[in-house]
Length: 227
Image (cartoon, rainbow, N blue to C red; front, side, top):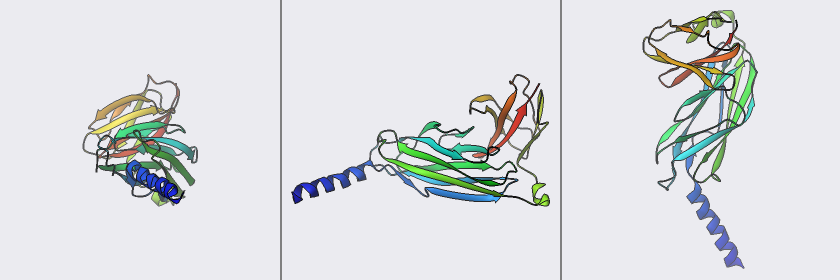
């Protein structure tokens, strides 16, 4: 009987060791800052699997508890996404011994408060090997002087009818995307000017998110389209 129990125990340890695919630098990431800005809650994942075929991974958002005005985005080693919602699922590849970021960005949109995003991260080949990650953000009220500091991304007018003027402090090429509230990309283009003008006349009325990706950093703001 003791031999059977020991055999089962050792077998369980071997199975657990074989199933391990990812090393995560921090499963509970907490950030805070003034409500006039944004904060990146980031951890690093490394593929430590001994299986050469174990290179595909997936994440699913389990919970979102944040003030309704906050703009949220999530980046994995493959891409960045905004318009997050519960149940949102994405996949990416990470080679053996390779490392990459899992980053949640809280854009506080001048709103004080606290919030969190909970997600599950797992190997597609061995889905039983899963980890839960928590990203928590806290925003505090800023003084007037701090609020007036230049933000990386701004635009006008808001609400907008036809033409939107974008102010982004960069001299290089930037990639600009517009998403609806479901997280679906509705417009996408690249621009080198620091003050590009874009047309949104073809968009339906409602709330949208505009994002600028520069050097793997995602800046996000919301706007409203009206007639």
